[in-house]
Image (cartoon, rainbow, N blue to C red; front, side, top):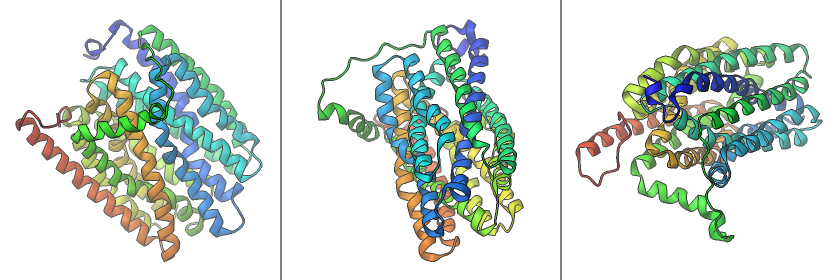
Length: 431
């Protein structure tokens, strides 16, 4: 069934999937340890002595990745202008090499500069990932294949997080060895992807460069506005994700502070009670969710996931030990499994044609940056003003709940549009 759904060269399906898995393993080994370790390095190594300033330094690090997602629309434009194999090398240079350079950091600002450049490189991956998924796998099976790839990501992430968490607990300088080695392994994965692009003839013809002008510079931004105005279903999908993102960003900003200041957690406890617990829960549910998404579509899948996530900030409030954080993280992982698939496959499905996929994925990623700018700092500010985790985490729970309602309403509207006038926005497949 999968072979008959391959857009081109179905005889290469086994090779493509195997090569994609190789890249996924080395990708997860590098980036899984970025998301949890960078804030902990601020809290426990590079941060200021003053606790107040250290909290804001932590927020700056946690907010950097979502904020620079706003560059995704410009990366998508670059992908239109150069061939895909060259773009993949640029991705490695901008994302992996700076992480390798973290080994040389001696103070917070050197450390943050490496993190900032690598985060911008991470944003460059999203348009390419959407293009590859659209080309390699057919619509009828993409959810299952993506679920499998995410299962591989989770296994690799769990192993990498456990290994580095245990290692750095014993040797706080372990990150200076780990990141350069993981960045070098990432190059091998990128070379495998470049080979798969050539094997399956996924290379696109670069578009002609526009005339140099301010309009040309702003073209990606103007195009984003045009897409959102013309595709009402996609706009409402993004609005629901914006609400979900408010809850996500508040929790993301406060978790390192809560874990270290309130619960006294160190590297291994934090890695195991947060990242490992989340990823083990996701691993358990990711394949069933992929099966579910292929049958009910990303809109309803996200509605269910957002509803489950409502429990996460509430359970964090109740946590009194690493075990309590781990329980909260399990529910977070279950909900995040649905979000992970819906986050990527929703824009791919809504885009329709292969040509639109990089732009829809880039728009989706860019709006993550808007959420990061507004809600990471807002969540920390609310905590600072009230001196209590209850206010921001309670607000996060309400945001998750309202996002679930928005997705449910979008599903109902898409169903009416399917049987309504011809002028209605086309609903998402299976939604």
